[in-house]
Length: 231
Ligand SMILES: Nc1nc2c(ncn2[C@@H]2O[C@H](COP(=O)(O)OP(=O)(O)OP(=O)(O)O)[C@@H](O)[C@H]2O)c(=O)[nH]1
Image (cartoon, rainbow, N blue to C red):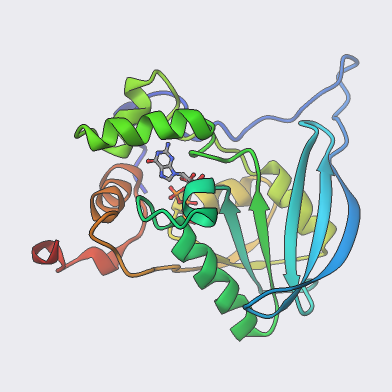
């Protein structure tokens, strides 16, 4: 991985913070609030709901089979309303969410942590929509955030690490193409035994976006090789 901070501007990898109260004590992390059976079209998961006391944000993890233990197949998925819910093909988020849930069910055990607050790589929904508009005008996904005066990637992964620890996940096989996600989880004390590619078929509408992620953000997307002529 190259250091892209100079390349893409400030805000990449802000994932260093430990929240302290006024007395300088570390603020307590996540609290497990509820667990419920969650039948889905992929299989039957357990939804485990958390309250993140630092941000007062509600979070949820989907658990399939036994999460606790070593080498748990794990997806840490950033919220994407347009891709995950509306099925937008601007990005590949929706396809990756489905592929991750299928992979976890096929493996017989695993966890998907769905991170709210990560919308638009952490810049929020409306800013992401503005960034998408700039991409329609020709900027790439990195240039668009910068043009808006926003960080290229404002996500942090502390809460994901705390949820995985609460579930007694001791090491993960991480479903991701993003080397920074792996590094961030390692920084937060999660043993990433393996990074498992989560490659989904590119679409005409997201091939530019995927190329920008590979070229500007170092995502490991080898399946884009050799498809230049197709779109
Ligand atoms: N700022 C911005 N965010 C986007 C855009 N398209 C999708 N996103 C957001 O990008 C986030 C997903 O990040 P990605 O960089 O696609 O993938 P990743 O999670 O880092 O890496 P993987 O683990 O390989 O999926 C989600 O929060 C989406 O809402 C866009 O055009 N601009």
